View (cartoon, rainbow, N blue to C red):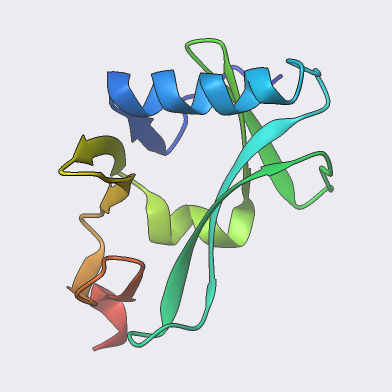
Length: 118
């Protein structure tokens, strides 16, 4: 696992929830949390947060307080400095991305336009 600093940070509640997700997969060392972006959504790029067993030569691996995280190198520049949080309020639960690189975000917070793509 790479020991460099992960470009994405996680709140304690996000770490707790993601650890629970990995526990449901039996804490298999091949299962990692994938963070990234892909084209789509109402603002151009959509956030990716999922479990993944595949790692390619285009990915970087991180250990974030024991949480195995994989990020593809193309996504890194869009995610640098992002804080991922998890909250549960009024029967609604979910992850939110606080991204300093986002010029605009959609109302649901799942897609964004990077500042440099104005």
